[in-house]
Length: 160
Image 1: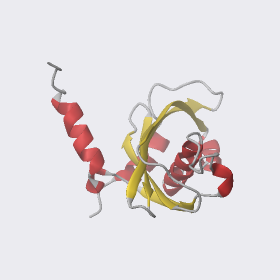
Image 2 (image 1 turned 90 degrees about the vertical axis):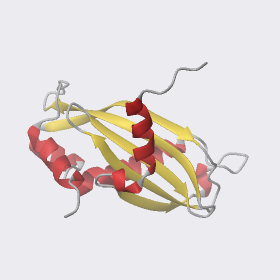
Image 3 (image 1 turned 180 degrees about the horizontal axis):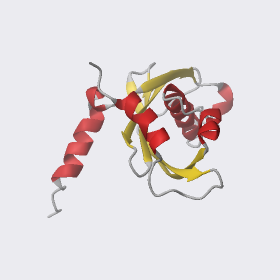
Image 4 (image 1 turned 30 degrees about the vertical axis):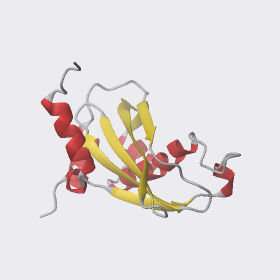
């Protein structure tokens, strides 16, 4: 008999499905270009990371943390983990919405994603990425620096 999920993991799965539990969520929409599909006319799996990157960039920009902002603050961000689970294919010409939101940012910046196939009204993928802050010399920091954390906290605060 399989062991039951720990209560925290079950709660995390439930909240990830509920839009109200998506602090600071941003979305970008796109039409699948021909050059992103393979011989079967579906999006090659590696291109989903490009779509996640578009949403991540928009999320960080909305926090005032675009690349130039980070340089001005004297910090950098490096990708230390990423994952994508594919649930329904995107095809050439279909419309997609890629959403990104913050899950945590105390020690590292954990971003969740959802890719929705708007043409078929289905979720096509979900994923996450984890970024760590570095100082100006590229040394990994064990905690997200206050100037970055303050900007992320302002974006992820619940609406009043």
